[in-house]
Length: 297
Image (cartoon, rainbow, N blue to C red):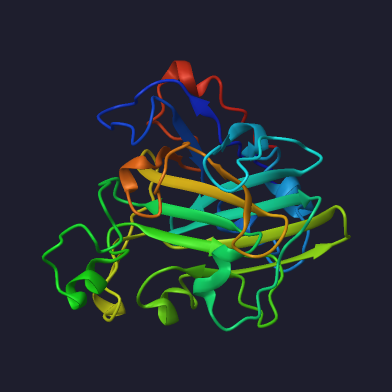
């Protein structure tokens, strides 16, 4: 079986003509070819297949910033919350993939189903994407003179926020947080699975894919434009991990990849991710390419 160690590594340079959203780090996100995607089961509540196909996790808890201003501002304690995250993309489908294993001493998930806009209130994960690397205010509030209709039209249009949850009574595990959710959350744009086992601690698993859009028109899916995910392209992305120990919406901790506030609104506060094709790619500078932990058997 072809096995690719698809690590998401931090490279300390600004590559090519791209400029970072936040900081000087460019994260490398590797392609998962269709043949390898077939070996990843999004519904098996296990990361064993991610480990087998991809290898080591892309990110772990210590890669994240624990925001001291949110909730109790709890800092990293593996006995409180620990997790591992795998990332990848597929160019043919324009999908970004994530697998996550989360170990939480107190697991809060009271999601009743039926409203994917409420997923953020529970122990979940947030995934934000800026596929064309344009940054900006993407929530529809950029212009105070916009009408309500104009705000809805521009909300999540050039960047998108998704939230995924492990346990759900209606089988819907991933939710886009903007207008047009009824089609953006459906096939072929998004899908996923998950579940949890144990108590004190609880191990939960999130497995899903989502689609970034350069131009998402909430009431015109046929006119919307998905992002081109190709070798060498730089995208913006952000990951946030909330931790609730008492009740939904009552934060104990809030972890983010960039340590920036209001990433649900400002895409320029995302991190940079450079896409690397399955063939090895040519866009990564030679001295950095040598640091990539990739092998083909």
